[in-house]
Length: 130
Figure (spheres, rainbow, N blue to C red):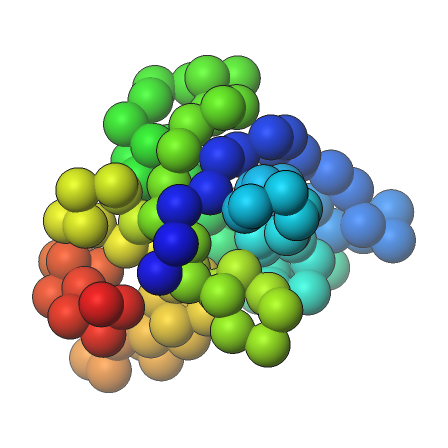
């Protein structure tokens, strides 16, 4: 993992049907995208009414990692970043105590209440990111 700085935070409409969010993170002079419609989408045709609220979870977890209370405050936050194949796949607190990998967390949530990850799974898997 390396340290990066969040330069921009976007919530946007994709294909006039879905809503997504992404962070632009600068790592050593190179900008990377974290999240976005390639990772998750929510919207009127994004699934059944019982689907997991991906957008809300993404925003909440990013705020939690940065230790801020509002989306507007997330800019310039420093985070740990995990890069795989030239993409940021996870962000973490600088302390190394909490990490967020949306692909892992969202995949676990989509399995349903009996198969999904426990509420503290994002803390339990921190050893995977060191």
